[in-house]
Amino acid sequence: MKTSARNEFLGRIKAVNKGAVNAEVILDIGGGTDLVANVTLESVDNLGLEIGKEAYALFKAPWVIITAEDHHFKTSARNKLCGVVSYCQKGSVNSEVGITLDSGNSVAAIITDESIQSLGLREGVRACALIKATHIILAVSV
Image (cartoon, rainbow, N blue to C red; front, side):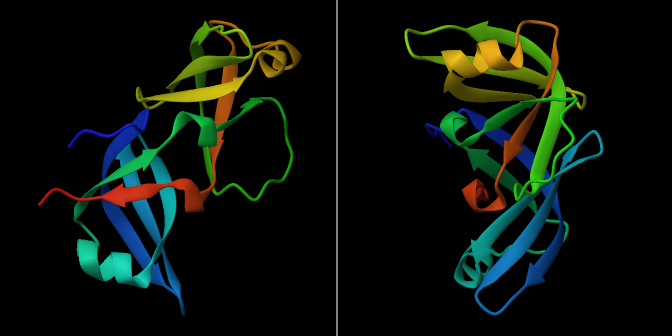
């Protein structure tokens, strides 16, 4: 599988909670870290999503919101992945930030240069990646 998504995690499904229109799928990506994805019921059926099955969680770097780890605020983002900034690759307007998670996985985000400055992001600083459950795409091997 090749994708344009910078963030790809292989995990095992822990739960599938079906609603009237969508389902919440909880994927264990290792290291005690879960990702929550919201997908349609049709996707649950088409992909055969069930507890114990392996699945990939994909999300694009621009969909990631970065915050300093010490910010304690409420957010609607279901996924909060924390770790250490491993790199900041500056661009003319936007920059790419990599965070090595406590689980050993890594997340890439595209944020503005201004955000890097205002958050004080640099290599070695702790930070968190926030990802909405609706921004996670699930895939399975066939």
